[in-house]
Image 1: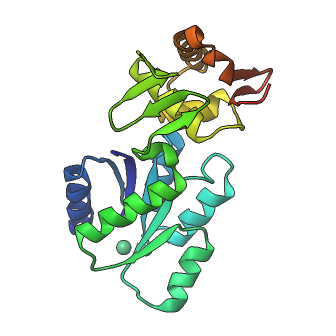
Image 2 (image 1 turned 90 degrees about the vertical axis):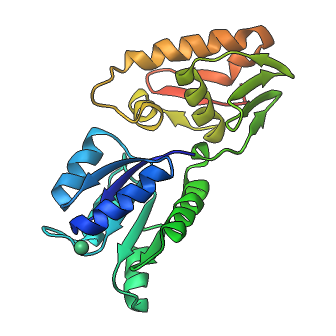
Length: 229
Ligand code: CA
C-alpha cells in the first residue's frame, strides 16, 4: 500500500536516510525541514501520513501536530512523531497532542515501516489492501478488481480509488473539496466539478447491477455512500 508521506525532519542526513527507505518501500515522499514548509505542503495537498520530528527550527513538531489536529481539513491525517527523547513524559505529551504513534531515534527502517503500516491500517482503511464488500459490491485492492454480485466490472483508476474511499467511509457526507483531498490528494489545482464527472462515470459502471444507488447526492453538500435510502 504505497502512501503519500510528508516527512518533516531538519537534519539532512536523517531526512535523506528516512526518505530513501520510504521510497524503497514504494511510498511517495514529500520533504520539509521547517514547520512553515511543512504546513505549506499540507495546504497544497493532504498527505496520507505525516512523519514529524520533535525538534524543528521555527516551531516544534508538537506545534505542527496541534495545528493539524485543530483544523477540520487536516484533523484526520495520521501522525507519527520522531524523536531522540525516550522520556515517558514526552511520549505522553506527543500522544496527547494527537499523534497516532511515537518512535524513538535511532530506529530501524523495518520498525518505522511496520509502524507506518499499522497506523495507516488503523486510521486510513482505504490505504490498506483489505477487500471490502457491501451488498454484493466487492472491491479488492490487492488484485485491483471490482465485482457486482460476482460479475467483474471495469473501472478507471480514479473511479476505483473513489469507490474504495466511499466503501471504507460509508454513511458520511463528503464534500467535493474533501473528496479531492482524500482521493486526488489535491484540492487546490483540481476543479471541484472534476468530482462530479468521475461520480457520473462510477455510477454508470454500477448501473447494470443497481449498485449505482449506493452513491447518493446530498444536495448542496456533496456525496454519500449509503445502503439506506
Ligand atoms: Ca530535529
